Length: 253
Image (cartoon, helix red, strand yellow):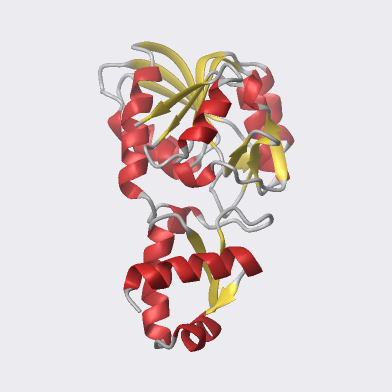
């Protein structure tokens, strides 16, 4: 069996059963566990499955949340293209909101030094990355820091966002679907994302193609709440067209 055939079989088994172990996949496909582990690493890189201890689960499994370090290693090219396209949404001068995430972190690296910005963020990592920029004022909202995402959450964060209004909010999402809108695994983080959307004039979502059609535990907004979704060229065209019927612009980078 060639690698593409194995990939197809693995994805079908993971999605059909909700998870699959390395041992079972190796036996069913008559290959070594090492081969399956390499296959799972490649499929995770492509955003088709998520690796867990001993096997894999479907992308977007409700209740599953990968760490920010592991998410930073997948779909690198796609996220770079999304970040480059998102730069067009960053004003020459003004206030922007950036949430924690691997795609927004790439956007930070692309912002030219001559832009005079106030950046409001819930990300400790983003704040540190921007702290020495001469023309950038960083406003790190307070609260409890989540280990998974290094984002601040809970009431301190929500209180801070009540008193600000930005030109644009650029946020990531774990899931985006027509039925449930924008979703993420953690309720406190969803509450902060919702407050961020409410605190900005223009609302932009950065989401690679694997997020489309996926639902997670906590909702933080409807599709009608946002202005633009920036994704990559791997997105399902029919799904993108359905989203655009809701008066949401879909940019494919």
